[in-house]
Image (cartoon, rainbow, N blue to C red; front, side, top):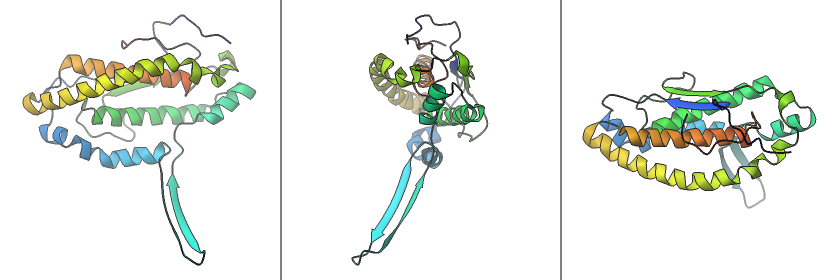
Length: 217
């Protein structure tokens, strides 16, 4: 097993978000941390969020209600690629649809867009994943990709902190000018793009090509 060092001009995972070259809504931007809650709850149910409530009587009787979601399909894919060298198309379609939805919510929360996230329409967030030919994927790589991606986790830790700082600055900029500074916008989109590529490599398992250390498209 080896990491492919070369990076193609177009990585199998891509993300582009249309820059809002217009005045943004000051009111929804100011209250964004609250307006995102309803759609955030829906996303939470889909990404393995679990809510439970239980009560047990002193006599030993009781009841419990639990709600949860499936989230991204990862463990079944590891087993499928390892033992069958197959990547079921409907599993890919689920992961792709969930990724698109989650990045629309992220773009809205980060003030990159002010239209409310749709559960199914693309809107201004353009995310694509290339369906893999499972016969060309290394059987053993899914077992170690999460480990090989550790350098990315370290870099992304600092990049995400920087992106959150940019988010706060952009929040003030929108409140005072109604505009999102283009440089901050491009940086945050670049961080999201980097995160997506690492997810595609280490968890969605659509490619054996090591993600580039780059914010560029």
